[in-house]
Length: 440
Image 1 (tube, rainbow, N blue to C red):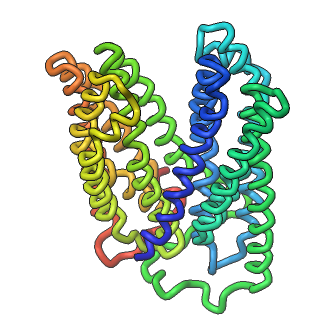
Image 2 (cartoon, rainbow, N blue to C red):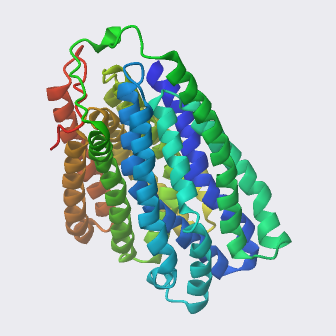
Image 3 (cartoon, rainbow, N blue to C red):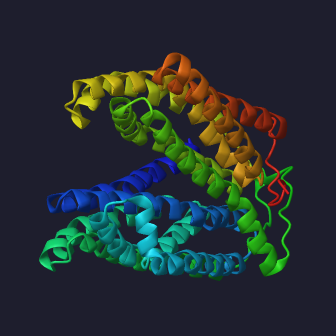
């Protein structure tokens, strides 16, 4: 199935780029002590927030390129995307570097850790344009229907980080800052390779000229995308990508609120929640891989595909696997019997959350590519409102189990709302209306 072929490389890329780099840095700096480990942990969290900003450009570009590939020249939209990416890079990196010391103090009250974090930010935030450029390059490849190249460059980047971390951290005596420098250097090399491949790909695309037929056979009933030049390209990219960015940032914020809420039940439930979410992450990445695959396929073909049903099935599979491995997996992360028991309990309850979550995330890709991402974001925010409200109410009545039930209730509500919207707009056998501003 095409969706799965697109999704598998994205899954590997997500695990590699989002999860592994931070873990590699933690591995190499852990002998430097607790403050160094805290610094890398803080920097990883800050970078995740920064990633949420650039998603507005990168995912919007994926959709815009997919809509045009095989229909018209890609040069104008690619140039617009690079201008937007450059502007966003400067808007985030420059203030981040200049305000690195107060920013570090927002994350920690320990003076030593704050000092190390500020030094780390000097390099990591200064190198943010490289990270953003790589993210945008990957977005262009995905718009062309190529998810394998971003996976390969992510694997290359990780291999370089593994090799460069000990050299910079210990060989050059840079300490924890060496981890930041190694990561930026590895990303720069991977970006150089990716840009070379992309330049060749776009050159071949331009040389081939416009297709003999402006519309593909499966474009029947697809509404044409309205374009008005450079400004129109920029508006299309931003309008299409903003809901994905908003979704990512909203989830990050709710995640922080959940940490605070669960922490109110004690250290053991909080440790169990943190351990459980780490174990669950590898499975959840499958949902986001399906989301990107659905977004790519919808943008390129105008057809939604079975994204929701695949997401629902993936949710069931991930929940079943986590229930099977819950006990041994918890034992790998903690030797505390109480924390391990709490982790297992969390993973068992998450079955009620993961099944609708898989459908919600996968369907979001189709909706975003059709210009209806704002409606998915609205449904997601409604689910979060229910989740947080119920978490306080059920938590008071049932303890931490009530919080887990609230997560499931909020996710189920959001999934149902999105399913209703998708069923109303994408009847079986019909193509998706690929207008960029249907939420406006």
